[in-house]
Image 1 (cartoon, one colour):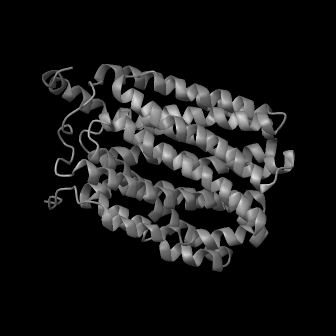
Image 2 (image 1 turned 90 degrees about the horizontal axis):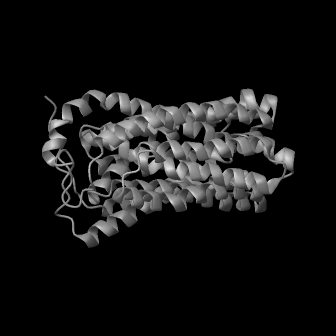
Image 3 (image 1 turned 30 degrees about the horizontal axis):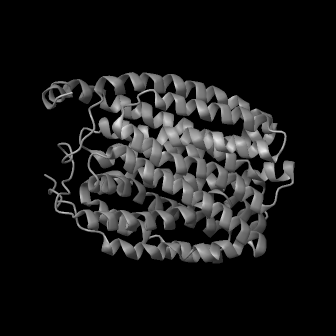
Length: 407
C-alpha cells in the first residue's frame, strides 16, 4: 500500500479506531481472564495433586516460558509477513489448554495444559499490540493503555471467578470458560478482517507520522536503552510474580484468611494494576515516557518496603498504590522501545511481552523454591528491594520532544 493510498483510507480507519481498540481490549480481557485462572486455582491444585511450592512454581515457569520464548519469534515473523488470522489461532491454543486443565489426571498433564495456554499468549500479544498501534491514530500511549487494561482487568477478574466458581464447583468447571475462548475467536476473526484491510507493508525507515523521531539516537545507545528497559521489566515482573503467584498463600499463612478472602484481596491488587495501566499510557503521551518510567519503578519502593511489616488491613491498603504505580510503567516502556526501534512494532512487542512473561515465570519458580527453604514472608521481605533497580532509568536517553503545553 502506498503512502497516498494509506492517507486516502485514513478517514475510514479513524472511524473504526475505537471500535477496534475496544474489540482488541475486550479480547485481551477474555484472554488474560482465562490465563489467570491457572495461578488463581493454585491452592486447589496444590491440595488435589499434593504439590509443593517448587512444583507450583514449575507450572508457572512452564506457562511463562512457552509464552516468553515464542513471543519475540512471532513478533519478528509478523513484522515481515502480515498474519491477520494469527489472533484467532492464538485464542484456539488457549481454548485447548483450558479443556486439558479442566480434566488433567496428573501433574505432567497440568504442565502440558500450562504450555498450551502459554503458547496461546505468545501468539496473541505481539499481533494484538500491533493492531492497537494501527488503530491508535498517533496516540500510541493511549492505545497501548486501552489494549493492556483489558488484559489487566481480565487478570483481576480471574481470581474472582476462580474463588466463586472453580473453587466452589471443582477443577472440571474450568471447561465452562471455553465459551469465553470461543467468543474471543469470533471477535478476533472480525478484527483480522479489519487488520487485513488496513495492513501496511513493514516500515524500514523513519517512524510513521505521529511517532516520536529517534534519528538522533545511535544504534549503540538504542541497544543500551533496550537493555536498561529489560532490567526494569525484570524488577517489575519479579516483584509481580511474588504477588500473582504467592499473595494468596502469603495472606493465608500470615493472617489465616480463607481461600475466598485471599482471592478477593488478590482481586483488589489486580484491579489497582488495571487502573495503573490505563493511566500510564496517556501520562506518557502528555508528560513523556521516561518520566512515567521513573515515577513508576522507583516510586513504588516506599510501599514495597513497608508491606511485609504491617497487618492485614494495611497490607490490603498498600497493595493498591503498589499495583497502581508499578503497572503504569509498562505502556510507557513498550511505546518508548517502539520509538527506539521504528518499524519493528511486532519484534518490540514480542520481546517485551515475552521477556515480561519469562521473568514472571522464572521469578515464580525461584521465589517458590525460596519459600520452600525459608518462608513466604521472607520472600516478600527480599522482593521489597527490587524497585531500587529503577535507578537505571537515569541512563535512558532523552528521545522525546518537549510536550506541547495544553491550550
